[in-house]
Amino acid sequence: MTKYGMLIETDVCIGCDVCLKACKDEFEGNDYLPYSAAQPTSSYGYGTNSTFGWPDTPSKLTPWYTNGHLWMNVKELIVGRYPAIKGRYLPTPCMQCDDAPCKKASTGGAITTRSDGILLIDPVKSAGQSQLVASCPYAAIFWNGSQNIPQKCTFCAHLVDQGKTPRCVEACPVSAMTFGDLNDPGSQIAKKVKALNAEQLHPEYGTQPKVYYSGLIKPFLKGTVVDAKGGAGLSGASVRLAASDGRTWTVTSNFYGDFEFTGLVTGQMYSLQISMSGRMTKKVMVFLNEAKHIGKLQLFQGGQ
Image (cartoon, rainbow, N blue to C red; front, top):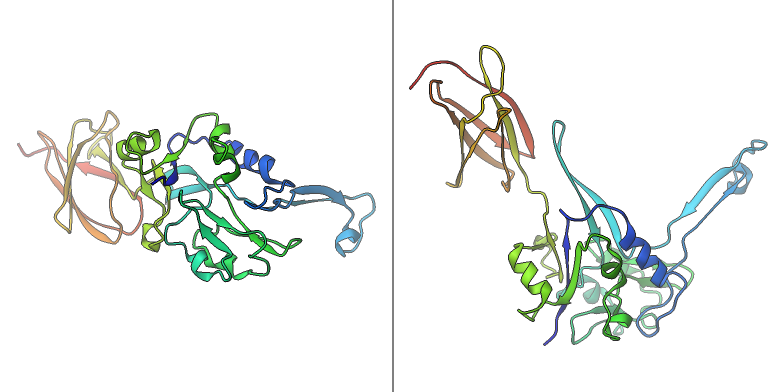
């Protein structure tokens, strides 16, 4: 049985917002009943302070803007703190969950899951059900006050039923999104999800989303091996990291003396050992509460 899903490669995404704009172009002001009612239109303009009930200032205009809904929202994902910072752009549509909290919170058949896995909010049956907005742990449901209904990404079901792909996937200039049948091992998306070891966002929610991500930044540990006397970076030092759960990793410092371990788990104690021919071995204990750079680690002359 067909099970439609989406793969988003965050290490490919350039944060251009074209997917967001394509979504708005498709849905703002456009009804696709019975799939969805029109998404509220974004608007902007200028007004005097009195327009907003503030004391007026002659000849001074204040800009205003409402962005409507963000059925596709491009967020910035930042991990770590200076000087150890990594960033990614994170496009977030509705996760199309198999075990959807919004569906459990709905009444009167307002939310249904199609046979192909696409989750839809009925634009008629959902009237007045504002509780659905708060029910989504991914904040992917929005309230349309003018129509008194909750709304969200539909995976462009009206286009899928015509044999087309969602507008966001079609519009992406760097092909960071892939749409297709997750249950077909021969499909492009199924092959990519497996090859890229893609994962779901916040699996701890237990919602079984059908949107997968690759390239997500994991907690990491960085540092620099330097000569204790002159402070120059030391290339070729062997750096071994051992976790409290028994796992180990080994890397070699680069030309500048830098090293990095990725894919770590926070909330654990790690043992760091640095060794190099003609230098004294250095050992450091590190508690990783977040991604971090532990600074310069000096190696003294001596040893074997």
